[in-house]
Image (cartoon, rainbow, N blue to C red; front, side, top):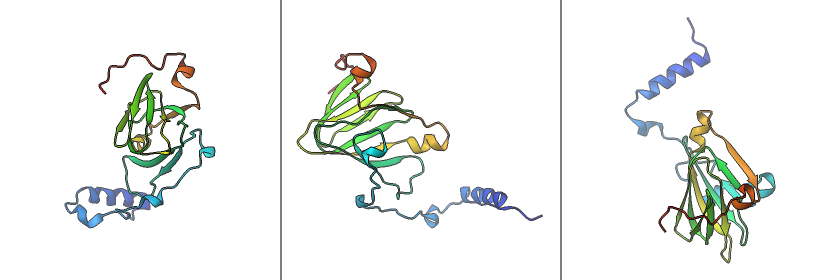
Length: 171
């Protein structure tokens, strides 16, 4: 009996899962320059910041993107089902995360927990540049990804809650 393409794909995947030499099956694009970021214009999404996903990287469980927040501007207020970490390449500002106001500078990491409202503000003298690592791709593969934007509003305005509430975090 001849196998159809779906059956053969399934069998090929089983055989690949038993391999012992992973070096023989390397993906393409192991090195991708930052100039390959696919910049999305802010007018295309609800975020005033520019996002540049690194779509040529062969990652299967996480996303990497560059982000630029213009001087004196901020991202949209959003929450999502995935964890995210922003690494501040350059710039300074603060983030509202779950009602906490947290300041950041060059070299800092900003962690955003799952499904917590957050927004990032640039208070520096030039565009802030950040590298974003998110587990969105893994959740999307599992059919569990969700993202929600409240738009260009502060945490306090959106939730009528004081954005400067005391936080249980260490500086």
